Image 1 (tube, rainbow, N blue to C red):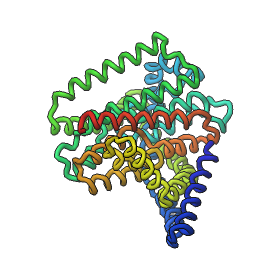
Image 2 (cartoon, rainbow, N blue to C red):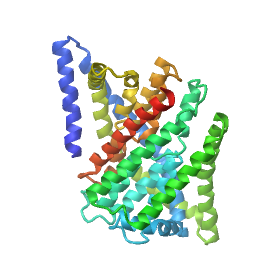
Image 3 (cartoon, helix red, strand yellow):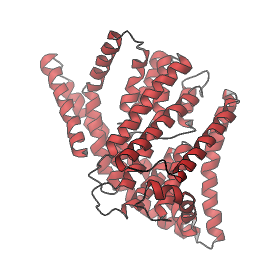
Image 4 (cartoon, rainbow, N blue to C red):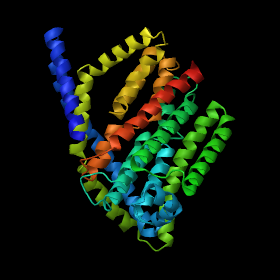
Length: 409
């Protein structure tokens, strides 16, 4: 499936470029496509250099956690749930601990911490995969839940809004929370449908019910805070949790007689060599995204959507924010740039800018995550993984539109 998608990006870009050259007389279009190729290749290298540091750091700490037995403890906590959602993963397998830590990092908006932990989890799941080039059911569920991006504390989006001079940087907190919850729920339901998982199992319902109660309690608590207090709480909780995890690894490791320094070095070496191997997969996906953007295909799509919306007599303000939604599954940096561009064009507290920020926080960069997570373990056939991930993206986008009209319309 990746082969067809990747090729279709280039074909669409080339067809659009031919039309602009032959039909519109734009002789510079191919120079922009070639520039996009090299720009995206350079961006891929920049991303890998950033990942080298974070991957080396976190795999070093994870090595300490594994040797101290913390991964096994986390695995046992969620063992009853994942035995039902991932029946192919043996009870107590280290992959369950890695998955738990990855979800915790995503929920807290700790992107740099979530990626290396998620890659470690994917490697653990790959050790159980009988067909190494085809995604297993467990790997697909893990990937889709990652791309749905359930985030309770979108600190980075608050930061961008504050940098642009927003009167209330955290105004999008609840819309993002509602949109990302819808995305994650649809992702889980779509995978459950394809894999025939029994979500009505009493144990699964108990875990989901507990999660819903915790989410409700959090919303009730945060609803009473001022914007300043909410921003301060978000930053404090995220950073305290991150450093608290590091200290827990070190202290528990030391108490259990683990040589924490040597163990860290062993894990860090693995992280360095592993990250470099991601470069070909990143270049492949990002250059395809780059030429698609440079060819004007996305702009043409927006024009068509605007025409259809106007034909129905609907409000068209949300269309100005759609570039962020469309590019988010393809490129995180591209979506971030589109969000900031929307803020600059319409004003940081305008309706399109508020919606763009909600789009940015509602889902993950699906094709990037797919390329990195599956590419890291050599998966070539993704089965229903991409379809379920895109269904989650669509749910997040539609919910974001609805809640923004509700909150800000």
